Image (cartoon, rainbow, N blue to C red; front, side, top):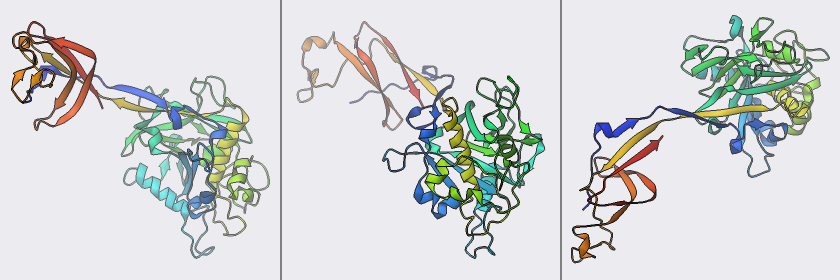
Length: 391
């Protein structure tokens, strides 16, 4: 017959939670380099490519390739997508993306994303980190995103360090921080004075980050002109959109040409004629900007860490001198005869504790703790064991 001892309230102690961080990307690595960013032909050239691109850490022909994050572009009115006039089967992919993230991230009644400085934007880029990567959360203040364009490489982080833990806001999507220009050491981007951190460009905030969901929303109105995204023909964008037909980015259609492109293009907010400009997907430009930043210098890497809170409970197992001195082990007890194998153990048993089992009220085993080595127990000895459960 099994014998159980119920824990008293004093035997159970809740420990302070601890936060454990690990590298965000596959293999618990903290840095994603240019050679770890791949697209999949079947997606880029397929219907899902209209909505988003999955970015892999290895060539997708490799069986070990895993999705690290997805990039997408959303527009409140479907800009950058063909209208039904252009294509009777058009789905307004960019409008679907905008609606998806608005429903996911914004509170009821909010129709647009509002960035720092009160800038409300009709469109956005999104980096959605694969759920298995973030575990519990993207570690705030412990990620940096490099983007490259005509104005060089710029680094973007969140402002959790500057606000000393004060949240930008607390929404149904959890915590929200501003995306700012800076680095993990406090050094600013390439066009800012050393030691400063900027939250906007020409009055337009760079974006928002939702660490509990692993989502980074970028504002094209600020990212495009600061980094230097090209418009049709020449120069860099100075506003929120290119207003003429874009012909230069037509090579951005296949996986190979996207990966080798050297110029990110400004978001297209007007309707696209579904034909020669079919390849002008706005999220392709974000991928090009990320890829080229990582190619320019090994110091520019998409660095990030995941974080999870480990809650611990300590159970103090008290084995008093008269308890747990006998065993049902066949080397100790003969079940057929009901006698001890060694009669001298009747008054002076010698047993060794190797395992502690934790049970519920239905006598169901819930957890098992193993001692590092057997510990002797007898009538003239008492033991105090501490079992820690992490969850």
